[in-house]
Length: 90
Image (cartoon, rainbow, N blue to C red; front, top):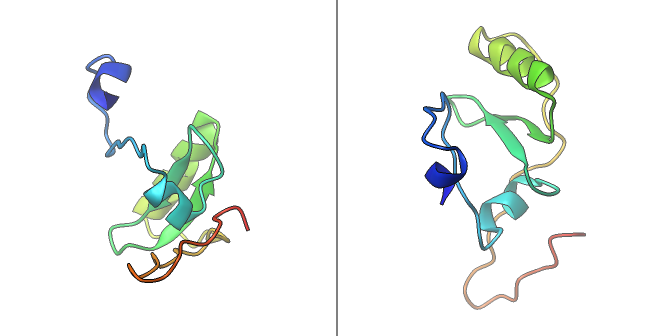
């Protein structure tokens, strides 16, 4: 589905479709389309919606190791199978 949506264009970043909202809820992405900028060490730098120029600047800064404000949303642990899921909107 993702490949079809992008029209076969080669993207320089991984793309995913999260139909269950598991990943987007874990990273605090407020809606679609949403972006999560994660460096190679797994640090979340930003989440949300960006215009292209802002997105490109953040990615370029992360690539060169520039200190940028980190995202406020923290990765939430998934509930264990015997625990009820909490409302992600809270």
